[in-house]
Image 1 (cartoon, one colour):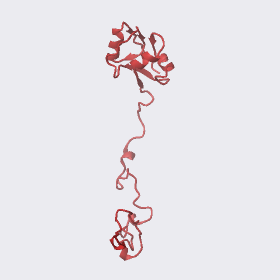
Image 2: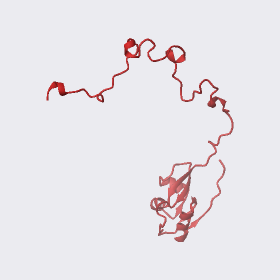
Image 3: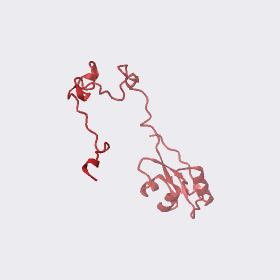
Length: 155
């Protein structure tokens, strides 16, 4: 093997674009920007994704006031029934008991779901004072427990 056999690989490093270095470079004179217009100027052609070619933009056409449901929406937190049974002390599952057990944040509304343990066998009778899915309700009632529906005051 000699030095003549060693060739430079093209994939090793890509050369940067040297704009305005003569006509022989292919990027001389106008530097690949064309002759006139906004794109040829400094600071031009840098339009955001919402630019619509000068047409009145969609986001400016939309009304900026009106109804939003953000302040009034009800946020439910899905709580696994198996976790609730494991972590809550006593035979009563309420919102406050789930908050104390760190299964949901303060201010949210809990909904018990059976999750992966669809055939969960409860060993104690529970009195549940939160919402529950059908399969969670069936598991609670099969163990002899009861579900008390509570009316929530609108806040």
